[in-house]
Length: 354
Image (tube, rainbow, N blue to C red; front, top):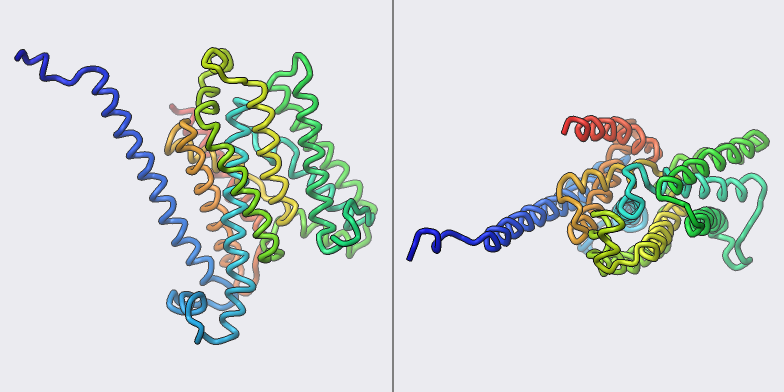
């Protein structure tokens, strides 16, 4: 036997390299899950009253725990903490798919105008009393208004994207135009709004987990659990799209249909969340970038990494919102913006230095 016959072939070396890369990616995802569980525990313990870990576990599992503590955890803190995870995962996953199919690092539910449209829809109900809901759904008047307006913006983008000559760059520019349009309409409504309605609109547009409850959490979780497997089944096609439209088409991917379906599903994810918790920016923009830096563009790893990264970002933001001012909870949208701006700035500089 010659020494050359004992050395690994290029195919074997490639397989070993891929296996090593996959293990590293899985390690990153596993680490995010562990940190996410720790953050969830801290979120449950943080509030106007601080509780040790044993009190949290007792409230969650021990039937003999004090009734007051059980009510605080089951009716207030646990729905809000889990809502932070679901909303963060949904927004980040939606942002990751929008960035993939539009091939634009600035694409997200926030930059495409969906959040601004939802804010305008909510303001229509809070200020003018305009309602798009049936009489039986009066308790969900504002969320339904926000959801309907956000999906209307998504369908408008979908309609124009089917027109001949419309490129992905034009779609992003169109979304930016929608942001300015809906913000201008919102400011016009705020100008004529009475003080009480104005304060309600301002609070809604800041984004807050205070409105979370088990029913809203169930609706958002159901949408996430339905959309996630659809994206997972298209992981190969979405990964091929990162190689370029011509390369993906040569591999048998229907790029037009994949792009439009992904935009609509991402819009559904973002619209449901924004309609319940208000405007939360930068999670859908920064989360996918961090996940892509850790695990790359392979959608089999990028999809869960984006979800866990977004959930972790919003969970940590929830902890921070309750820790900055003693006895008060800042709107979580303010926290994500204040933290997201410098973080995104750092990501831009790091990408530029490569």
